[in-house]
Image 1 (tube, helix red, strand yellow):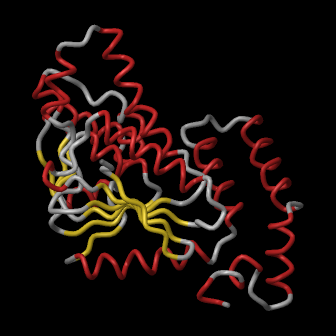
Image 2: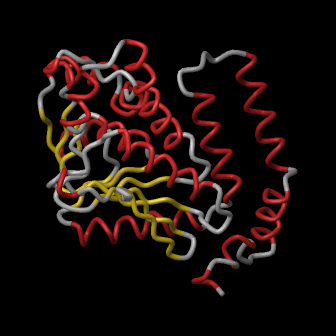
Length: 266
């Protein structure tokens, strides 16, 4: 049984966590399933944007209780191998070559916060709630930490990693974990539709390059090597087919090929 569904709507892939009876909690099967679905949509040339969604009341309640019981009996080596499954999922989502949008309609705890942080853009409703509750179980939010700390900053992480307190959507928005906060799911879907339209107006290769640029520049020292690297990146993109097409389209006052070829513009 698949705990993840993928729907292709033109250039948009909607990847949905589909374990509502368990509040979309993680176990090794869901982790492997979601990783495979993300890899599959990343390999599709017709997909330009990925929306990560969830069915039911919760976005993801974190670790499944039965999975936790099994892990409790694992050796340290077995636990490391198990943890690498979740680590691979998070890296896959973060490093996806296509822009990702998290649609957060409800509670996101533990690894669910990690999924939100791994997405390029996150939109939620006031029903969304968050918690990094691992320390209350004597654990730590280890494999999600690079992405969560990048999203909310070390100072906020030092509070929420240590207190494990629940925080609401307004606080998530203030911290930068959510980019947009909506009153309800209808408003959220309209906001996501507008964001996706903006992304589809951009060149798919430039999107990929921009994502890699963010990773390369974030927290890097302002050195001569970094300056040279950024110059090399824009030089390479300027002479690329997509870069050439984009500039020509601008000068000729027409839509670039990647916009003209999308279904809504045919």
